[in-house]
Length: 189
Image: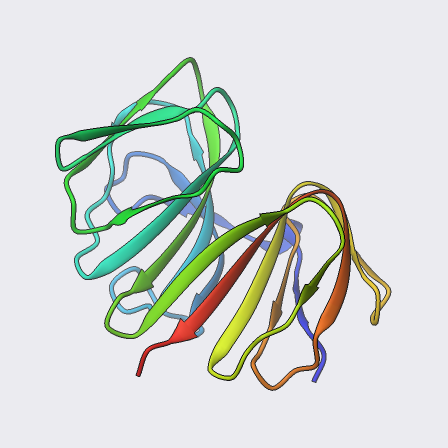
């Protein structure tokens, strides 16, 4: 089976669950799932102003600043300053979370998983790597800056293009010329 290529130009932006901004879903599982019934969801958001985050009960979140000066997230009363690009921050979607932009708009990368069904780990790669899904795991990779090339398929991914490998697929060598976020999505059932 060939990896699933997900091109940035094929996505449609939509309002946040709380109506406070715009998100662009990259991929959700199961396919066609909405914000109330996904097992996992991966998206990119344009954040133009400070304000509260949407609450997602039973969801674990990982957020990474891709562009802009960063933000301060107050999660259940504890502030986390996220002012370094490409540094993932994990927190509970159940938590009361407020965002204060540090000095202007940002773009962030979001991974959300329903904790009873899945878990996620996000790593950042800046060079050659191998995408190798273990049994029960899918591997998702998205170019946050620059480009990346899948060797076996001779496919070049541009900024915000992505690839998904299922657990029954062969490993894929990928050359990174920029920054690549790699997400391991594991079923917990």
